[in-house]
Image (tube, rainbow, N blue to C red):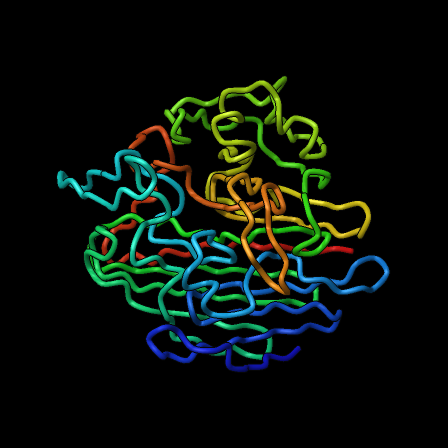
Length: 347
């Protein structure tokens, strides 16, 4: 195992960006940036030994600074959507940026994936990034210490460990927003990828893609991935939630103890023999089939279009802060938040 460091250009403010690359014994590697604590590349062999980068992204800092796609992003303070960009905590209303219609999406400005982090190695197979999010940043209460650690193992696991601690009661719901294409980024649509999810329900969402608090049994619906099927099978089904999102962009209720760690999903691609198992201790996973990608210029001159990747974002349920029936993402003052998600690759 080894970690290397190199310069990845500079931001518009002239701040140097460092790329950390972790390589394991199996010729798999992960590249990470201290700008945004971003996953810039995941290079994985296929069944014949050919190595491809399986996540969408950019070859320069400007792409990440200017882009609005969240490629490889560390998302916070609150991943996904909050209805009306408002929540109440301890009797106080907090107003957030309305950046998704009337709602808040992924925290708002300053975006967690567009700020600099202090980054360093942690042994020969891990890199961590940390910063303090000031009280009131994005509209959330409390000065929040945040840290995300990425570890690559010789079992081909990319382990993502989240830590946070606030000096005031707050909420916290981080995720990773990598866009996966197991054939390799830039290789076209992922609708022939196969997916399996350990979930018997999804959260019902309205026309603004926000959960209503109701649950839908997946049996007999386009959201039934209890047994493996291709994304293409039902992605264009006659379903209000699918039509409203342009494809999959829903939250699955994972079949496990809500904060228990377990394997929850498997994404696979037949021609390369690559697959990716997902493990998490969070209660939900948002599957997003890249419905809003529209001619984005990415790595190597590749152009990313609709459904050229799929995200598997482990998280608390969207809008959980406003729905008492959902597991809360409340973080009490002084209490440590710890969570782990693993993407394990096979070929």
